[in-house]
Length: 77
Image (cartoon, rainbow, N blue to C red; front, side, top):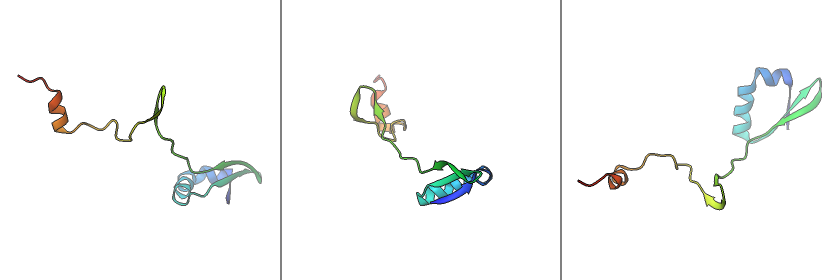
């Protein structure tokens, strides 16, 4: 596991985040040579809706509806 000082982590935060994202390897941050924190990749969690733990909300839930679907909701004259 890679180790960096808190000063280096502060200076290179964006680069460290990109490295962690690319490699998936955690980085230990030290303060005066003592390990104080570990930065590791985030684990994505599936979205769930309230009282329905089995219901999974798709990532494109907020995407606009296709034109044919929108037309079905328009009042017919």
